[in-house]
Image (cartoon, rainbow, N blue to C red; front, top):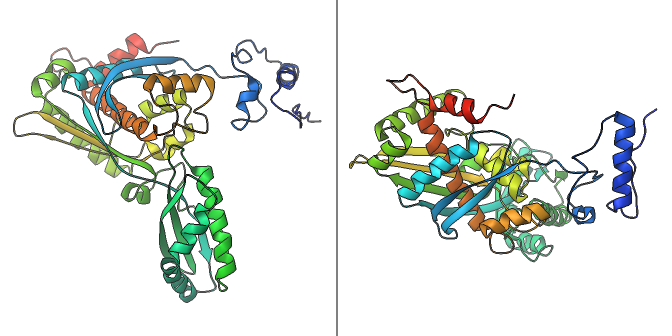
Length: 394
């Protein structure tokens, strides 16, 4: 007969119930908990972040930098905490950061921001759906007022609407301040949908999420519009710096990027970059972001060219970069410390963190983009050699 996990309905985060769960796991599974049950924070601080807590997963955190950024919100040099178990990764990002510093820094621009909830409204037929589509436009002001009554931070900026058959798929686009905003937008949109249900008689029913928000996965709609923060990071690297630090010419970098971009098209990939998820996941783990948001955050486009002067121009646009400096996991003890390293904890820091994240992606792309080539003389590959030297843990 199955045994129930111990819980305390009055306070499921007190040290006694946590210890009881640890004993339960050891007795039930036969595992010995030495490391997972050792942690330095008060388990009651985890309320709202996890249920049935019994311990922690300790992921190593390294630091890379300094990363030189010429942003509107992130300006200067930053030492970036990165949590990962992949050897060679921080070494690679450090190399990219060195190139960025010598080239004068990476320029970052927040182009737009929005967080969505995407209800689907269901009608008896397509004509009713079409009429409702028009009604949404005419009544946006009232819907906005109702949605914003639930939050002091969130603002309903737009409702996208797309008719298909007898359905109207929508995306309620909000600005959410320094929070990622998924819970905020859910509450606001639910209240708005209930108001719509009361005030539009021919509506049969609605789904609060019709899957058009494409949460935690890539999509063409996010690529064209945006989800979270849309950020572009760009840099021009003088030829001499490129050849000395990356041991590759701008022409060779451009040539390789063209080939891999074609492969991305052929495989229907979410991006034509090398590995944006690597740096983003390491940053997200360290700073208390929702790691599942890598699903959409790693989506991006890369553009590069060789300038008339023979230098290397590189840029990346991340249209769905979801980061927060406030709320969620950002105030947990170790995550807060990592955000403080970046000067990104608390209010009015989310856009700064987004620019750092985009600049971090550039560092990783430059380094790996150069490392995958094979040296014509030695017939060696930096990517393979680095993993053999730094990434072997067998």
